[in-house]
Image (cartoon, rainbow, N blue to C red; front, side, top):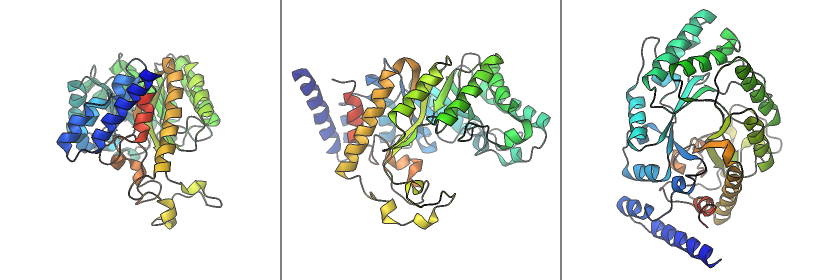
Length: 379
């Protein structure tokens, strides 16, 4: 017990020093006093972060310090999606992607390619393709060009993203409308041939739901029956303080692992704000403009309350306890962002809100949630 208290006291001292820093240089120095996430979990699974265009370009030294110290895996938020990297049929834009891969290589990180085939953020010219032969050729050119360029450099590919509806049925995306479900097998097959050593993942949200879970199981089994390589399932993990339940998450981990594939938690964040669909009597709509500027929907415009900090810390503690319980089944845990200011949840589903879903706040200072996660491995 004395050893545990001493270790915790040391962490708290370092944390206090960090909070009292007055400039970036002091913060960078104090970060070195804290045990890092990647070091703490190095024998369990990779700890990753999604990074933005500015972070790829390394425009802020404090961002670089936190990223390099805490994480050993990176994912590009947007810069490898179809409309960014392949904006015209015969035009590929690799400038940012090259910098992203170089950043990962320089710091000996696991590099994730995100994402090869997704109905959203699709280049407009692809929306005009109406026949299956042309679409298949375009997918082949897209995957071969990108994956071969980064062969041996990108370790993992999110090959197909969000191909399922909430009930587990296949989404009627533009790809599906033109090719049926053949586009999924095609994408995985092409990626496997372009780089046989890369890990190939199917990535989606709400994969803790039993109906959607069943859809993923069907999808993976079908690929396996066709002899097509698939190495993992990516659970996006955009969760809240209340849900999903640990039981539902665990059931999905076990179900996917039983398929012989690894699980990655690819886009982890925990919203602390109320969502419109949680309100009694609120219609589930595409637009929630009626809730903009509503203080009830934005309760922490400046910073989290102490009670909310505690709630978030407990939620992350419970989540990571589960991850450690099933560490033999998990490849990677990636946070969707490095700090709160970067999070997409600041503007979704209601514009103009201030969210606090990650382990580092807007000043890159570690929150109680960070300490609660570290404490699981530093006792």
